[in-house]
Amino acid sequence: MLYSIENNSILQYYHSMETGLCSKRRIMYTNTGMDFILDTHANLQCPFTVNDLRPHDYRNFRGMLRHDFVMLFDYATRFPEFNSFTSHEKNMFYRQIVAVDFILSSAYYTAKLGQAHRQMVLTNGEYLNMDPLPMSGNEIDARRYFDCDEDFSKYRALMPMHIAIWEESIVPFSKLNVTFEEFCLLKALTVWQATYFKLTENGREKCRRQRNIIIGFLSKMCHSPGGGGEHRVGELLMSMNYLRESAQKLTTSYVMLTVFNVLNCDSMLHEMLNFQY
Image (cartoon, rainbow, N blue to C red; front, side):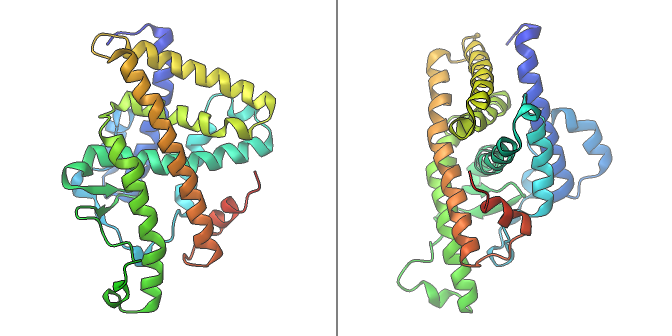
């Protein structure tokens, strides 16, 4: 599809942000050589290959770690007009990005790598087998499958959250068959949409401006030959409803996990979850 230079600029901007994040995750979570990273970083659309994926280990799971926050800090500060936000707005915006990224990136990586094998791919390159669905831990006889109460409690706290994300966001998102370009724009748009009502009126004006730019470009992209037209625009915009809901539920789940000390969380995750909007 052909676009004018003006239209291409917004896509190229978010495309660059996303490929940069993919490169950082590939460096962090795989054994890929730096030569490959340097050669491919500008066009890297997924940080992992199927061979890079590792089974999820709930026993050692600690939620997001310091390096995850570092990677997303760089991603967040590149959003247009971010530096013009108030300090409170920057804090809030960054926290929304953390939740939205986990949901959308997991959904996109799963669609590209794990859907054929019914595996849920997480942002750290781990996967969970989801066919058949794992037990939630709330079954009557679930305790007998675990060696100790600590393992059982942690599993029962984590697995319902993962199953809900799978069923409510990852499965429907995979059916959209989004392109990388659509993913880059949809993820950014979801961040702007999720933060809108948490901003000052001045911040909301910036948010409206950035949302309109992305929606306008998505519409032009979808109305190009083979783009799917209004139906495709509607599909992408409607997907934000369940993606945002999952991001909110994720945050709520993490709050509960830290309150009851289920995870040995990084101190920064505690700080994030204690932030008053």
